[in-house]
Image: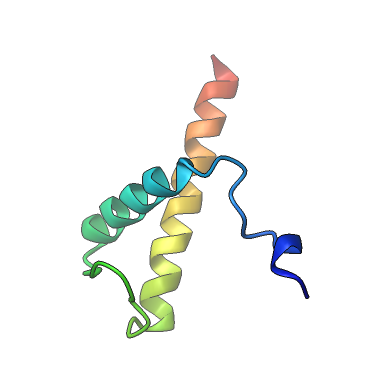
Length: 68
């Protein structure tokens, strides 16, 4: 599959830095230490915890915005 068809491409390239900061913030809050660069040594549980919490927060934020 061509990388241009990947759903992992950001629509707004500048969003990458914001998502990285968000990921680092969430990881620190749940007690998972991230390094700059490669973090492939994380367990699936740790990586899933970070991603899951990010999604929960994004959904919560969207729900709050929809109420306003």
